[in-house]
Length: 287
Image (cartoon, rainbow, N blue to C red):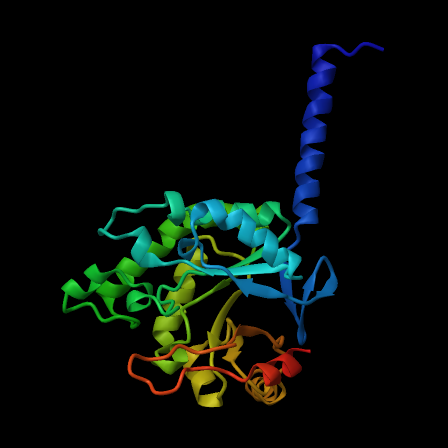
């Protein structure tokens, strides 16, 4: 039976709707359940490794991501470095090795989930923790605080990052499943107003996937570094059972997630001993 043009358009329209709905259903978000993560209604374990896109030539991104997946990872984690994207106030660059959206799309095409850590402060053993140097030109700007001038710059940055990345959120069918707010803030300050306003900026910029913070263990650090509406995640190098027991005391039924498992440490210029960790102990703990 031959279809006329109107019938073909109708079938094509219905098929397009079906495929769109299938994409949304098949890309369900990671959800925070009681004591664990769930994905597509089933308990989900995040097996993540960090690859920072500007630290690797763009031509090698896919190669590195393929190898990460071959290691058994299901998720890639990356910072977003403010100071490479806005070297001059108001002028943004997402070209070449700075094309974070392209990096994330490649990961998604390979079947990897992505966790994004946009800061605004990222540490990462990166100059000024990712802050643009021009922030320091204004003595009235107070970094990592509820300072009006600082927060105005932060809001512009986060919203611009949102333009690049919110289309890639899991809620929009993309690979980004979680987003981090700030970075180890509990080691620096305890301004709840700042953390709340920063969280609101992320939400108003379209980041509607689970938001989290990361801090080293310790009740005081966790109390200082997170707020109730954000998932607290731990960074550490040893004794996971002890650290997660402490997390359970701080926030009962929070999923046990390691934001950073430190397998080594940097060595300062002039140190007589190389910074290191005990590989045998870490291997045992990971197993």
